Length: 584
Image 1: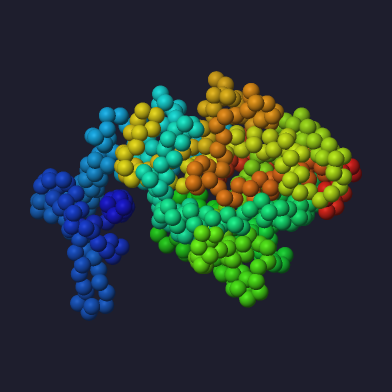
Image 2 (image 1 turned 180 degrees about the vertical axis):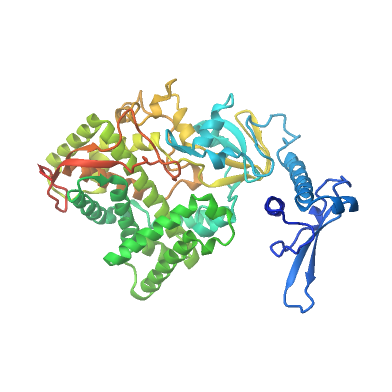
């Protein structure tokens, strides 16, 4: 994006009255010869030439920007005027290029999808200014764009000068994403995004064979047997956090469930042995790291490794590297990280994951398992407070489980087979408030046709979970109340074949389906089962059915207050989750 960066630099210079034509500009190091003519043949505006010059004492090299404007303009026009002219020529050239990039493929008869590319330089400004709202949470830009076209299941937009087509609806998602590794491949609009994730993550691998091999090895650490072995730690971590609720008049459930999922991250996924002060630091670093992933300021500005998110990433990488050294010395320990570190490819036992691959995918599992579970549990706490009949049914189901199994330790099999309503509560929560954005971006390597519209080669391709769930014909109602956490929260719909949603993809679709899904579901089921067993009743402190507000920026929507509750009774804790409330 050198042209965009150049135009923005000159814009800053113009606004400050600095002459961009004569002083050296050390931040501009190169400009390809093909981009030297910004005016596309307009001799009046002239050319921009970047030359490298050295000072007389050769202390340093400097790059100077020169513009071949008519001499009378350089004499009579002020610096801001001259800068404005060059900005105009740069914008014109960018526009001409974007016009070519955003043109339909002439070899296809299908038209481009409806939609608005916005500003030719940076795309749709609304994505920056109104990406989220208090009323609906993050993802507001995509809902707005969908509302402006006749077919909301496919539309185009532009982000940072890159054209993108958004699809939704299971039929369209399948049409586009079943071509993964054949006609579309994953990628990133911002290099800093992959740097914060690790470039060896399954999220960014584009080679089919390597991706399949990595999924096999990472999958060995996420088997049902591995999740079963992790259940005692999940129960222990959930009980420890529920114990703390009685110590407070008000409890912010977002903090409670985040601490629980962070416990899973360091204890179960990474296999670390952290002291109390280290646990707090670990939690802060994970928060800083995830915060950087969703913060455009962090992703857009140079030097991401020097940001708070970049330093947090380095901290986490160091923890993982030390743990791998320990595993190498002492052998397997049952953690997810250990499973990946010692995994061998079934097709070729000589193949193992590299240290870089282990690091990148351990971080991916932390994000997938921790952020997804914590956000969904926060929304579930809100939903249960707004719909007390649902909480009552959840408690009744757990009493039935206890009647059947006694106070045996909770197992994954018990939660999956004997708790259908618990499963329905989690699914309904994820149906209404799934991932707000787009997930990993793909790019069309050749033109494809989806829903009667073409997606030209080079365009970004993404799918939207919220729009897919919202437009599901099995649940959709005209006033959109089926997507309201107070009016449309009905877990019972999942228990009847006639009312069960037919378009539900909270963990993605296709070959990049989330490998951490089983762990995330086990976390959520364990916590909610114990919460229902131990909490007699609770009330929301700030939210009411008529007044629910959301945070504007998050990976998955969360209530603006973090779901603050106060409990009226809490049972004594034991290793298995006792019932029988006592005053708090």
